[in-house]
Length: 441
Image (cartoon, rainbow, N blue to C red; front, top):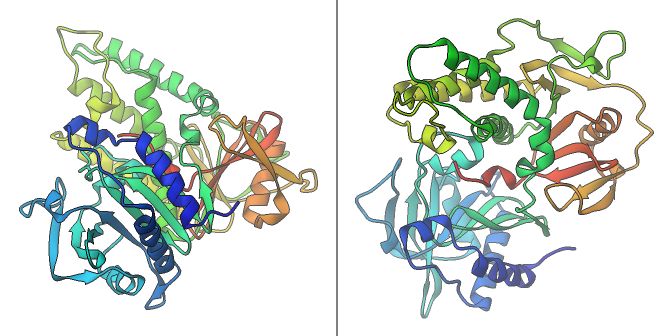
């Protein structure tokens, strides 16, 4: 079903009233209210119109916030605050003005500030430089995020693509007239937790062995810490691939030496296969180093069984070694994403990348439809014919149909992200286009 401004406004009002932002409740600030139905329809319609435009032959992308300029003190700025600059006089709010402003308002670092005027409707009062820490929820990172006010925010991310937020929390996403459910976050599913559990168990065992081998205090960790590390790396790789706008396919085997890549009867032909040595295991070693850094820095001789959480690690901002590890993890993600620019899939396992330029082989006539999930466990689905998808998606569907333990993620050139996995007797797909923003770091 296609959704238009009137239906979208009804949905926004419904979700807005039930989802106050975490920053609003933590800081005790008054909850924000939405403008009236007609005004909200005009605002969304204007943003939709500008999304279909181009500026100097580039798609228009921008972020917009409906908030009073007084919410942003004039003496602050990134990385911990917001730098707001006022126009004198304010500018009119319409799609043409937004299009002209868009090159100067970098999507990742700035927002257009608007507020209602009693006689002139909405007006653009200025711009807000936010810095890029807000993107940590998508790309990973350990720095404290500068939280937006509890206000109505619109992301214009491409033709017909709008993401409606309350502060940083997604309320609804519109993609070419279709509504995407930002609550169906497969990264929070039980099946994915189980799929990646063996890796976490081996890292936990290695950490306990490390604790027993040293004489200084080292804290404990739990699954939650390693799970965050795993998803941070995945989210960074996908985010960089989206930013590069070349698309890519990532095939993830949960075990260490997948038999499906054996030379005798391979399901994937790797044009560029890496030799299995210490360099391939760098991804795993970076995770081990991160665990040891956090648990050693926060170890307590008076509390030998202290458990370090991910939040504890995030607050280790004063440690220079943390910055080095953060940069190393980001460079690993950049490297993995760059491999996807070559035709074929990037193939990884629990220890790291096995190779790239992977071509999926075997019979491609056994699958005609896939299940499109609307919940995180893949129990609520609708069926879709695979003939409507491109060759990159279809080959992944056939692979998941043949190898049930594999998980595949496809990033399209337009920035859409889809995950495929065999679930409940059928290849099941989740739209991850909006999911990288979900969750707190």
